[in-house]
Length: 322
Image (cartoon, rainbow, N blue to C red; front, side, top):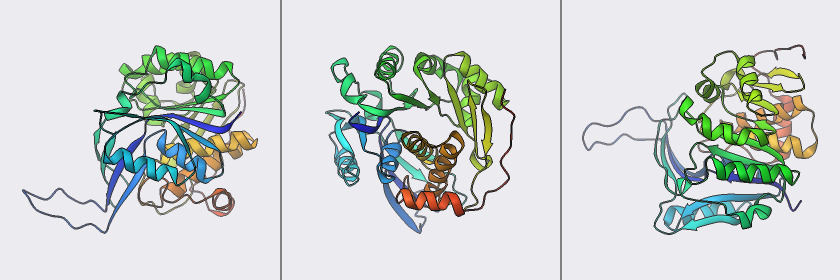
């Protein structure tokens, strides 16, 4: 394979302000301590974090021909990410967000869907975009032109080529389930947040939710649990929970997407399932220490050192396989 990691889906331009406390009345002004720009989105964060930790990475998605698109290309190019399939769409704005990050790390946002809903991957590019050890589809449920049959065809092609396939979602209700269900039969690792998994399934118990998605075709579910860590549930019976790291949170924007890149790194490097999840958790935790997606992640050695030296919030929950 030419690439370690192909990250396809949701790319966005973010402008972030911190700490957000209130909307000023009328035409008033509230002073902030910091404003930052970032390439974000379920595929964008994963592409840059993957490149930072040493993966040879290809970006696959859509942006506009506007100033935000110019900046996204310039920024992502600083990390030597291949952008041959990060296509530009005239007349469609780059997907963009204004993110208002509170002091506790939570971040309400204003968003323009833009090119994420417009881009397509044509069949004659299937070989190119899946020329990777790990093929990641990030933002299922938000890719209007690709969701459903087109994404299913691309995932099926990736699996047939021998890619390890991973999927993340942008989903808030059972109405998004058909788009997710379309790709699960060709998904090795399904990587939603627990909130997204609950919303899609209508269930609350982690193990029951995982079995629900395994029943729809996924081989393994890995749910990010926020301060409770991450839960791994494989079709072969392997189940465990890895705790979150003890950090001072600045901004949670992109934490799940950084987790996905860390998870891909573990797969590429042949780490054990538990160490793969721990490395992914470390990427996510470091991401949360800076303002804007990827801000806290530097390189592989930094993440590995953090993983092996940083205290966790609680002992890992040990679960019997079966």
